[in-house]
Image (cartoon, rainbow, N blue to C red; front, side):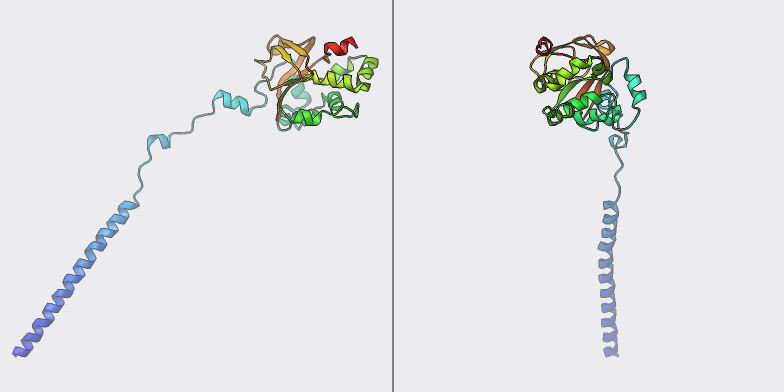
Length: 234
């Protein structure tokens, strides 16, 4: 009997010990689960992160819209003649200026003059595409107004043709609200630009449509071909 009682006592002690150990093991696990739940709990978004993005300011919109700064009484006619494609206002904005002008059906004579088509000794394409400029661009009608004999005389003389063409190019890009004044051209002579908005004049030439953006230049199409003093004397 004593032996049996002793064995029963040992068994009870062992069972109690196992129960105690089991209780201690479960408690930390419960705490660990709680910590994991707390760790994955999402923090509330603050007011700033919930606010909608502010709309683009006016200056940013102007920079993104090629037509934002157009001036000239004939801009609407230009848009109607070239509503889309590479020669349109938006299309020209994608290319450097000589390339952009070559796509504009209003500037075919100017394009031929700067690309060596009229005189193979005068090719200004790389020059015009290689830096930032303000370009005064006579339209085809402007060239057509020059007597054929006079135009041929200029075209056949490479130096004179270069002088005339570079007189239409001003280093740096100027918007319509800052272009008025006297500016030294790539030719070295000074062109006088007066007025504002639709009434801008370039020496004696009137504005057709200006503020046309290209990848590297601002273009002002005009209704007459400008002549530097040296070319006029000749």
